[in-house]
Length: 220
Image 1 (tube, helix red, strand yellow):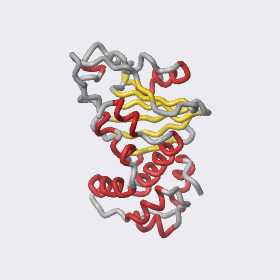
Image 2: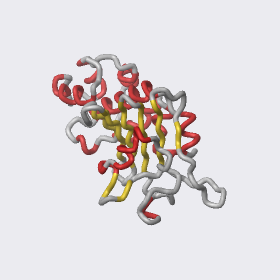
Image 3: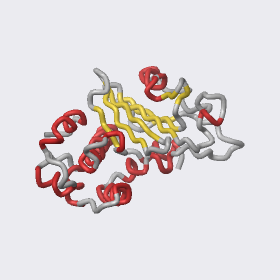
Image 4: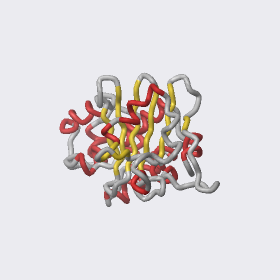
């Protein structure tokens, strides 16, 4: 799967935002004391006009989704991809960001998505509010062959998007059982209850999660 395939499989903007908030809330419950170790995060107050969903795996791979009134902008970075700027001259692979519309150009240039000036991007998609589908650039191929950009695995949980998929991943990642019914409740954005929190992690209380719930913008 490359960026074009991903564009056909991602949910619409509203559904994607809900999914990102759900996964961030679940990670916050399962890993309450160490935000830097959470795989999925959501900042409902990233700027005055933008929200940010993000994933970092601790190995240098990441994605970000910027939500705004204009729509949504996605960038992904697979550090091992031949399309990594580090594998070339320090600039994005030809075609990846060349046709990003002006309304999202500030996201392309944002220092948050760079390290020492080098853009961390191998995948880029966007969708304006009036668009009926996700869009991506006309990426130059290598002699007509598809070049792996990380789309096939970076965004797997966004594409599959089921509580069962999250549960299976979380049990591997956190190394303990994860209560499926509680995951389903969070995927449905039901307000958290003490029982639901305890089912996921008895070491944290609903009251302790207050600030995190607000920062994620999870419904109360």
